[in-house]
Length: 495
Image 1 (cartoon, rainbow, N blue to C red):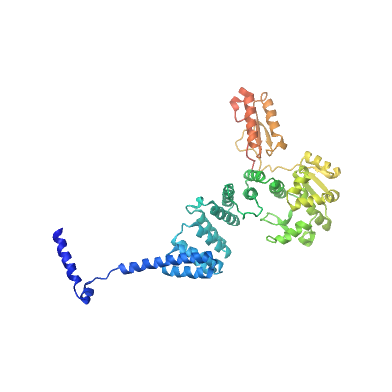
Image 2: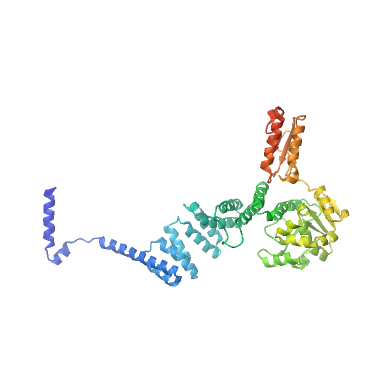
């Protein structure tokens, strides 16, 4: 080793004393100066980046933008500088520059959920919702998003709205459920603090939306469960939640008309319907809709479009109040079907509902009683309630809601000789299902071959299930061979 090193040292010393030109000719080109220049540029870019941040904090946006741009010239592969430029470009209305900076930043670093979200907002502003949805999908899949619930909240909420807009209802439902779950965490909110919209109300609003999506997907069991969760979060929504469930009943009933062709007369059309729809306000015309809700002005419909209607049939008392001016202008009879809530709800609860239709019902129910041609009660109990409220007994008839025997039919392969008692009802105290369970437990001793099937859901589901277990235990050996069969408290709704 020493034999090799000594001549090398001697050679280096000799070269050191050669004249300048000779040393230049002998020295080979080196890459080190170019590499050093890049390091110097990056250090200078970092200095400019810090200066731009200071300008931005001082609200000197033009100077901050120019300084970031100088830094980018020195370090063109920096994703961070481009990300910093995006909100500044947007604030300065340089939309194309903002879009280009976002795209390039995501090409360099595609795992940043903040930049994907900004990109999605840009695309939405440019009316490119399809691309915006894809950007939000990428944002939602970025690593680390779960550790930032406030960002996850915004991303999933916007994604849910776009899923719903494109008809991807299952994914929209899943996104809104996630948002509702995140809102339950301390410190979370979809609204600015001090807006007056408390978190429980926000959660209730989301759960109500989830319920509507479930109805659109023909999933009433999930809808009822979501609506019940919403009611627990905000009891003032109880009346409106009842309307959502009734909407499905109304459409199904209209589909089975034989002598009449149904036309839906609505304040605002919110989704496609299988029948002709005449609306007082077009979708998006919120001002006209509010005007109608406040005034009940029949002319907002354009009565020429309604002139061929032989009668009007309103579902629920508040709708009857709104239909009354139209029926009188057309000179046709008004029929109103009462499904229940308006006959048992107190005047106070209707006032607290904060719903304009309920206010109108309270103000004009007397007119409805005097001028309505016929009032249909869907049960004897509701008929008695209407008469007690002052509706003329001679114009109140009980007429049960029909059952679609094609949709609700015995299961294939089901034993036709099996004997069972079927109860279908929502799990609330008013339905008396607890009485049914204990009554059946008493007769099951004498009729062990008979089965009770209870179908429903609601706030008392867990309590009723426990009661069913208690009834089964009380019967002892009588139900041992048929445990889980003779008494079944179901938590789902027949579809």
